[in-house]
Image 1 (cartoon, rainbow, N blue to C red):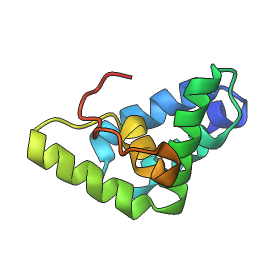
Image 2: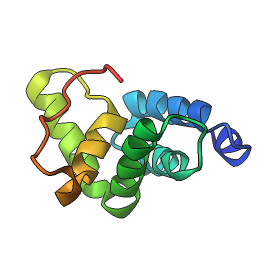
Image 3: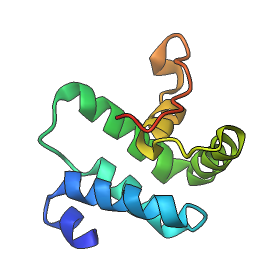
Image 4: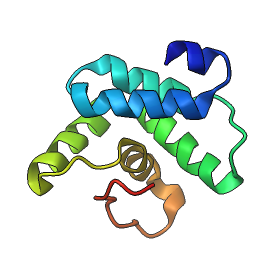
Length: 108
């Protein structure tokens, strides 16, 4: 996944990091890899870039918050949330206006 990120294949890097998170969410390295991949320039639509940027910033600036919230949502619902949507929700901050509902599904 580092090779994909460094070669500009950010979508692949994000998918690989998110997949690794399903198995190793307690460890910091998959979160770091995902955060770095999300902050790399991509060729996606502008709306998706906003989600990617908010998620990448949340993961790289406050990884302990995103990881703790991920653990609590997983424990409460019995299902792991999408780490990118959860991080984007966490990183939305005051720019979001009204607070959006917590993303509890795996849908992207």
